[in-house]
Length: 312
Image (tube, rainbow, N blue to C red; front, side):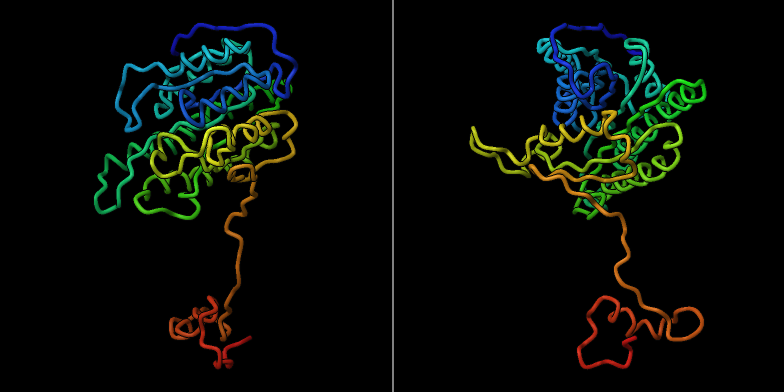
């Protein structure tokens, strides 16, 4: 376990998350920082987890987790810092143990930690792929595993459970993007984890949802335009944090297994792999390659208009 000092100030009004305990990974900067601040402002005790590494994963002397804890406590909130690595199985468990030791329980996990290794696949290395998968996909899986184990034990012991897991995905994992094959694979995999574990954990009183925020962070530096001071910034990281706070609350217990995209001030419900049309074999058996020469264009609506004999 990584040692940390508990810092707490009284004075916050009752909030949606009053008394709940949340862990936010990658919370030293960007989206994670915004989430940690919002959760604390709503009354949660927050474990601010961040390695302090550079965006490419290299070690630095930065202590962003401590800086965010200082922000939270200065505003009257309750938080501790943690610098464990989500990509290490034992360390991931220690991050959650840190929360339970400090605050006596665990109610929400926000899987947000990430790095970038953006390269077209012909230029990417095995190390680029492994590092991306380790932080995004394995990190989410590891934290989810340890949280699920804790909540299952609490449920079996007869203790009330209101567990919440909020995973961070991306448009790259749903729609694809040049240079992000590894990143997109990791984010798509996190959607798979979300859907499966939502089914597994509902019996214990745990929900699992994912957010896909469009936000300006270190990972999107130079890609999203700046806005003038005093105007609403549609890609500010904090735009997604109200959604995170809601999903971390007891009020969201009815919602699980969902992917929610946040674009500016819009919350968008995503539908995963909904069937969109079908072509059925003209025979009694399996589809044949020969019939698909015309059948696939018909399915995709690209068959020239005048050909009607295949319409069914």
